[in-house]
Amino acid sequence: MTSIKHFFSKTGDGAWSVAEDGQILFWNMAAVELLGYPAEEAVNKYCWQLLGGLTPQGEPYCAPSCPVRQNIRQGIPVTSFDVQLRHRSGHYILTNMSTIPVPQGFDENFLVHLLRMRKQQHQTYHPFRFYLLGPLVVMRHDGTQVEGALWNRVKTRALMAYLVMQKGTAVSREQILEMLWPDLDDKAAMHNLNTTVYNLRRSLEPHLEKASQSRYLLYQNGCYRLAGAKEHWLDVDAFECGIRRARQETDRETAVKLYKIALALYRGDYLFDLTDTHSWVRDQQFRLQEIYLTALAELAQLYEKMDMPEEAIAIYQQILSIDCCQENSCRKLMDLFLQLGKRSEAIQICQRVAKCLENELDVLISAQTRALYEKICRAV
Image 1 (spheres, rainbow, N blue to C red):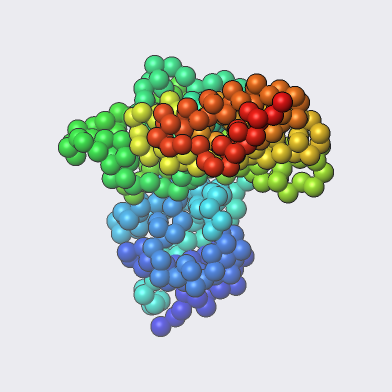
Image 2 (tube, rainbow, N blue to C red):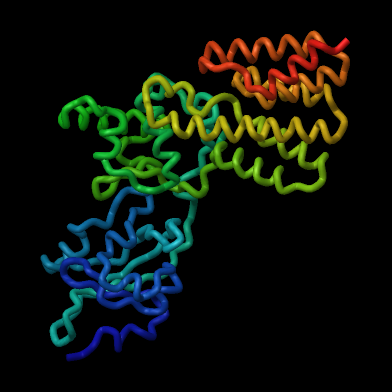
């Protein structure tokens, strides 16, 4: 029996063969170079699961009931066509694919795909800028903001935020239903999901002829995902990256600038416009607020080291305006006020924090804070 591998191992085109059910049986070196998957990762996988093919417009194409294999079974010739395939790194590349049915006399292969890179005539989608620190804001590449009646619906924005944070990872319908409509029966929840997906697609691309043609919100194999995740800008990523850079900087003045740039991205607590309706927001909200408060304290300490007490005081006051129970910032403020001869301000800030701790947490100030307070009260 003649081997497919013998014929296509040396071709310059990417080549792989599949069985009748779509299982990959052969994968040549050109396919490795084009798509990044080594043969041992590709062989025995199902092609639609590995490559997640999309049309050039971003619509799902590959599926268990592959249109190419259906045509071949029916004796219908398959001409070459363009298709976006998922590279091993996660991004999609535009390719041109030809298909050769395997004639009798060869091994168990059903068909062979030949693949070559296709130069894109234009970008299939444009990146967005997503702002999640504060209320959700989405900006298009042309500077316009996503808005309108459909966008103003809470579930529309919640679905957008959730998909953004998945960074291109597909999310099952079941997971979304449980997240957004946990108390509804399956039929009602599915109806709401379909409506919400329609609303989101129309919000992102108001001029679509059909909402199902969205280039951004894609559906495949029971899952939704956001296309082009790596190209979109996300304030959460920029914020965390900026804080890390500031912490690594050894020059104090440069570090201060980096801290201020990163901290300016924090317009408010993470998705605070969705907090009351979606519990999944809270864990991320607490985590990012802690990063923000810690970074503010680090900036204030830099100001102290640079002998800039007024700037440090302003930062510590900002921390306490967000979390009035931060005793460490309270003590720092008390010390700074005392250094500037502002004894009454030091006493007042301690009294406010003590009251906050009692009201919010039902606890007394620590022995360390009380000792500082008593020292200031005794000072003449």
